[in-house]
Image 1 (cartoon, rainbow, N blue to C red):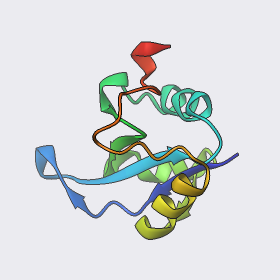
Image 2: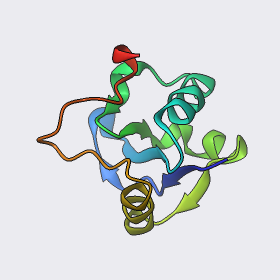
Image 3: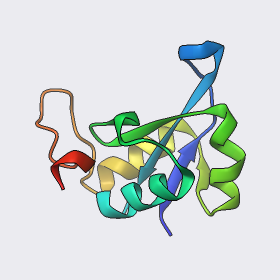
Length: 96
């Protein structure tokens, strides 16, 4: 499995800290893992899911690899799955 998650350190809604959930293999793998976690499709943002700290431990238990934010972005780029803001939402779960 190549689903990655960074430490929840991004402030977000509901006074929670948030993580990024990505795959360095495919969007299909990422969307499947997000469904398994119960993360709604609206949490998908171009190339990652924003997930609250309340889901972090479960994601790791289910096999997500804990990495730094820097490593997460590096591996996403190396896999060719990094989607810049100016690019269309090709990997969007609603487009599948």
